[in-house]
Image (tube, rainbow, N blue to C red; front, side, top):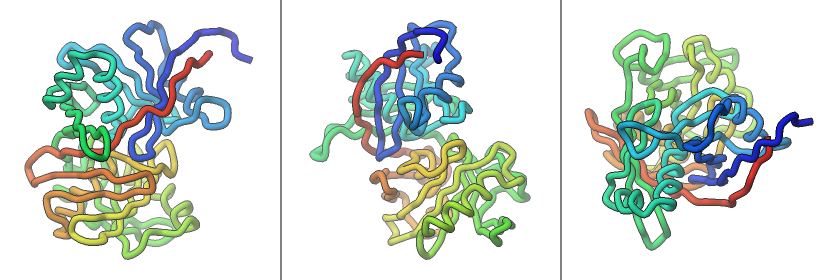
Length: 287
């Protein structure tokens, strides 16, 4: 039985199938957002989502995005960033004008990011800058030698898994395979990689199958979540790793079960990702 009756207005949004509970926290005080994520993201007893997104005030940006995984841990989320950008823009005409110009700024744990609202024949799309990828093992973080971790043989109880580890705002281990894993292998091996000792902060696991130089199919295991239909930071990690391995050029479509995320990157530069961000419904949650 709940002991209090606090009403929290929320918007359910999704980006390429990655779904979120979005709350405008700018007028909410004394809220344990990590605890709220544990409650609200539960798909059996709460609203149900891949994460909680909280809009907050920011001194050096239009707004701040606070993201919490379903286990309550704070993180950075590319799909969530697109959803937050559209959420903010559609509620403030001035913010929408900046978004159309590509000047809407959002503060994240990984830094300030810029967002642009695009009106296309396929509907509204949101493009966001993600900053440059981090390869330094200490920044990923991953306990492995060398200036970057590319095609590293990771020993697991299920045998060696070849991974490329990098951070695109969140830690990712990308493993390139000839064919995406079936349910049994995906469900057995992904947690072993997520919680492997070489990843002190755990990692999301991106299984990637290169179809051609501009298309990669993926299956996604997010840390603190499990399988998800999409992952924006993960799509960026896949695109960057493929370019570094010489299997893709400067732009690639990363195709997951939830949809397509277009990733652009040139070595030494910032990543840009573009995809859908849509409202599913709105409601009020009692906590």
